[in-house]
Image (cartoon, rainbow, N blue to C red; front, side):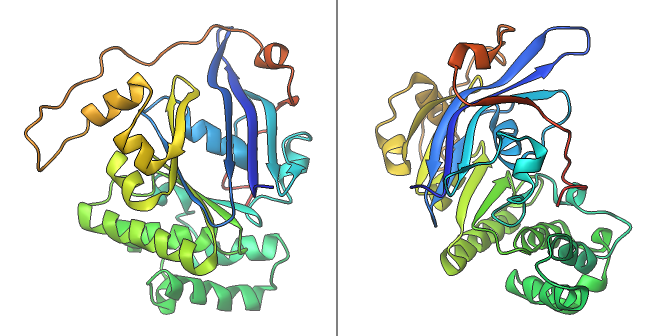
Length: 300
């Protein structure tokens, strides 16, 4: 049995003036313990919505159908009440844009300690001590935790966000484009840190990115998303050397090659649309629920 099993996941959103938009359309994949898995695709293809659904962090306008099982337990069948015991303890997330993941009014250490106290993992004194250890683990002096987020550089904030995600010792980590807005050297350091932590702590990782070289450097398996669906899934080496789907081949053709002479090929068109229909009625699999509106800041 896999650590995480996602089966026929659908997410759709009510529009302000009527109708619905389907952001995720029948996504299925497995994640084994200790495995590093990449979720690749262009902006708007449904990557972030997929992992927010896994965490139960979708807004109230979202409806979800399908199954997400952690260690065999379906965590979506009961909405917020069923996913809350698993969030941050079994599955944690590093959000895109580390500055937005922190409360500017609280110190970094306080925010790393907060999930531990909230979930009963440690009392306040133990949580403060553990926060310093986690900062040291990601390469930040423990004393720096007394600072506020704006006093950290971009790379330090991203490292602190990873430390916060590790606070309750989860089994899997979801990283949503963790190198966004960082310079090339800091990006490499953050990716190296994620790889090292996965190896040392036995973490499973889902890395969301549109950067194919990052997937090759970090992940063992990858899935390519297009229009809310997974169009290809397999070992990274197979995707690189024997891509089967035309969109996967176009993604590689659109990636700059610093050492080759081939010209970059652009992908024509825009984001695909979806026909307003009920995915639950079509699929007949899993429970359908209106999400309760849990957010990253209130449901750690």
